[in-house]
Image (cartoon, rainbow, N blue to C red; front, side, top):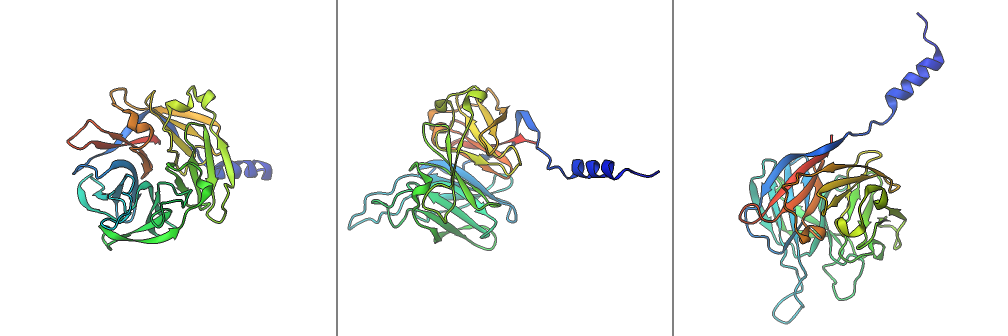
Amino acid sequence: MRISPVFLSIALLTILQPAHAEILAEAQIGIKIPLAQKPSTRPMTVAYIPKLKHYYIADGGLAPMPSEFESAASKSQIHAYDDTGKYINSSKPGYDNRSIYYNPNSNKLETVTYNVSSDVGFSPNTGIYSIDLTDTGELKDTSGDVFGFNPAFGDAATMPSYNPETKQYYAKQERSNKVWVVDLKSRDKVGEISLDLTKAGVAFDDISDHFVAYSGVKGEELVVLDVDHKAALIFDLNGKYVGKSELPKSLKLHAQNHYNGTGYANNMLFVYRENEGEFGTYYGFNVLN
């Protein structure tokens, strides 16, 4: 039987179309990480390194004012856990971490600090830094420079996510639906995404104020935590609302979840449950199948 060239072309195009992940109507728990010790400051966000199969949880808090007795280094720590949630170790590299992520382009664990958008009064510990690890993934107290302050990030407390394909950052702006697109080569934002919150049925003060996640899934790239309605909201890179995944209604979220205690790593949305366990527990939810 002969196959029409037109039919063959259509069939190939269908096969080659990038598949969209299914948005799970109800989020599924992928992992729980009970914190093994009291957070040094506020628990901020989570990273995962696939090769090492380790999770990294970063705390964030302002550094003390420098004096002749104390440096301006933040007391915030970073903590390592294995892929079962077992505690490994902690380090104090000296940064007020806002966003921590694994960069496959540099093969490093990296952190974006508070006030990355300004150098006023916060140098030299403001910007983007790589966190040193041992060969087996334990944290060290040492770090390296990646990039200094950049006004393109906008909001001082933003918790940006990183797109390794474009090497760009998505920086959520506070008290708004705006996400700035940042390329480190530029001192100005290279784009702006307006999330369609009206279509999603929420207001800007319902969702996490500083956090937006990059999922890596085509057409469903941006994930936002709806704190007030306990859901993960999914948008594309144009800001179009795509759908939502409901979090368990029994999940107790607090006002702090608007400003910290979130993350997206190992294809899961992480939420900090403050009142579970001695020091709180991070839940990793699968929201995209």
